[in-house]
Image (cartoon, rainbow, N blue to C red; front, top):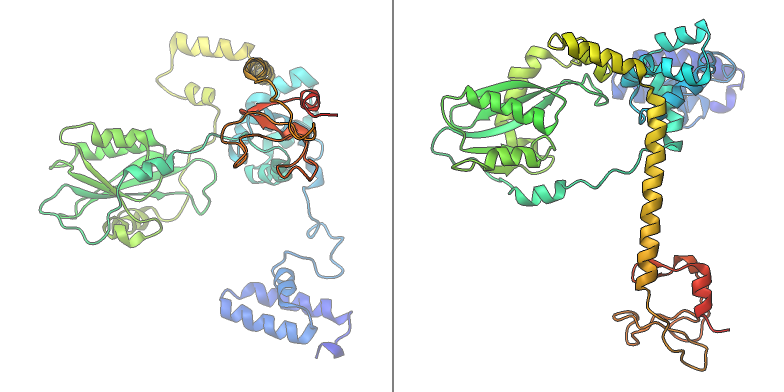
Length: 420
């Protein structure tokens, strides 16, 4: 049938089918419609999914404002300001960046000049979602600094797996889990509910925790433990970082007698079926699936709104804030970091020069040069420079990639060791 439909008719047909496609919610219903459109138009299903789903424009719609891709033109003038403050504040998410913009904008204007009233209004009214969309292409170009490796694997090795049914003789053996009130998005900060369920009695406790950090989770568990009519004897959780961390493990084990700590198999919710049931009946059915969070404020704003911060402390904080420029502080931190790493490189170079051994004697009439490196090349004990280990092929690698005793040699130093 696609051979009988003209190119001018296909866009009109697709506009009608797009409305039908977006009204259908079932996977099977949409699949039937896709099959029909593919047969009528001759277009591929993958292309039709994007066109009917609104991800690609239909022919003739490419110049409309609705189908134009990229950030809206109205934010072009303030994007450099947003990006500069975003980078200086260590690339927070859009929700937190909105609060940072309000605090840091005076400092930016002091450094670069005042903005227009229109630009200030745009920065004041821009949404967190729009901030994330504007900065999405810049996140790849400006990656975060590499964090240290997690010790989660070490902790998992210390906590044994619990498999099979529970075999307990009395109360005190708990399954523990956490429920995220994220509203479908794990980005940013929000409330969690920590849930404990006793295997023998079915007793269940719930306590809120802001985010799922080790301290907040441990505090929630401690509050529930104070309400227990019996002592805790064992605790079994999933493999989440809120439970497998040094802070909580010390809380369980640094007591007499120590609590028996176990964990379930990864991605096996049935291993914690008792607490999973309470997650539904005691948390989800009461609070639903909505997101529970707090307004994203800078730390100083949170303190100013805290009723416990009054008097001289409040005045001193405001006075300190009035003389600080966060952009200058960030620039100073970067400058100090560069000095620290420069000194570290200089120290490593000096230590390497002092420990570098002398070149070994040449072999094979000057065609081979080696170093006495124990455990180097198999059977020779030498690391060859002028040629490969078979003494035939020439060395074609980059000389600055060479390492000796984990110390880098410069090009000149390596060249002086190679016979002419």
